[in-house]
Amino acid sequence: MNESLDEMYRDIILDHYRSPRGKKPLEKTDIASEGHNPSCGDEIDVELQVDDDTVKDVHVNCHGCAISVASGSMLAEIVKGKTLAEAFRIAELVKKILKGEETEIPEDLGDLDALKGVRQFPVRIKCALLSWVTLMEGLKDYKSGQRGGKSSISTDDDKD
Ligand code: ZN
Image 1 (cartoon, rainbow, N blue to C red):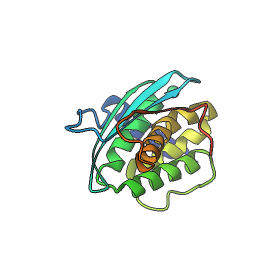
Image 2: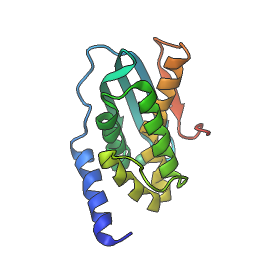
Image 3: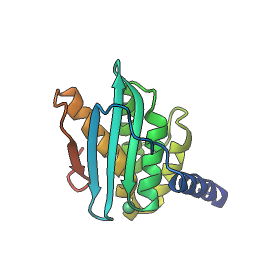
Image 4: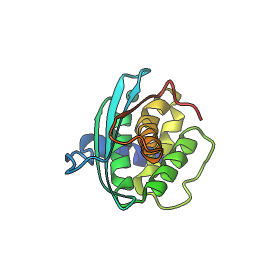
């Protein structure tokens, strides 16, 4: 990876950190999950408003480092308007990319490309993963019929 690419990634991440997307509270919350990343202290709430199996709106509230906040902001931006199945698939893809199991983002997922830069910093990978595993946990519980409660996950408990 060359230096200018690194800079581009950094700028995208800083932009999301400074003005996170998905700050507006939802009119109605259908899926709520919270996640913790003990290794860094990041905490996140991911909430979805669902209409006809599609994510109508997303609310993300993250208290943590720049990477965790930026990653949550990217999630809010990308998942809105997607079906629940697509949202889950994107989260799985991001997870693979962060873990180095997948090297390319095969479709145009916008700023998500910047998360690839995080792989150079192994201690930050869980920070970037946090929002996505939190989303996946909420989607899994919703699908299995555990609705109405709040899902919870720690990056330490996240297994494949
Ligand atoms: Zn962090």
